[in-house]
Length: 114
Length: 117
Image (cartoon, rainbow over all chains, first blue to last red; front, side, top):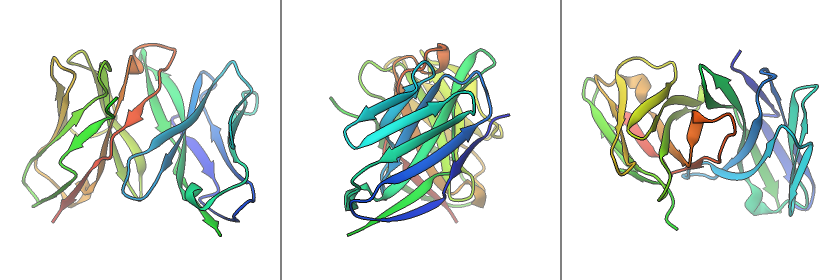
């Protein structure tokens, strides 16, 4: 089925703490998993992505891990800052009918408090 | 390098009217996908255009249509507007989009906020 479950729906942390957002997907053939950050009044911005042949990818304070066996992938933000406050979306690339399309999770609203 | 540009940013329409939204992709990108974003349903895929052809379609009624021009700019049209069509409409551009098993990154515009009254 076409479904990506994302948890938690809201997350509140203190500045400097770490934040973890988890997603579970259903299609074992999915091979691309991007994460988007959406600030108020803006479109989603691609912040990191991972392909199915890689277990972990890091970019400064952001990392993504992928467990294909369990069909889980997670976003890790370390040393959070107030400007990290936004809604984060995970997605999977689902191959259907000969084409890919992105299926998004419901989003996580992250609030980083100074 | 300019990003994805969507116009207009805001629209207010009356039930029964129709509306056309525009999206200019990143230069060199040939794929444009459209999404509807609402608080209740999240980001829902509408359709994708590549080289002026609709290549992929989501589960939306026929009132939602689109097209793509030879310069890759795309328009989306919604006819006979309903209150439930109020949403943020986003377009995303990518080099190859959905046509390959190896996905290329999709970049979103700021969106058009449509309000139907």
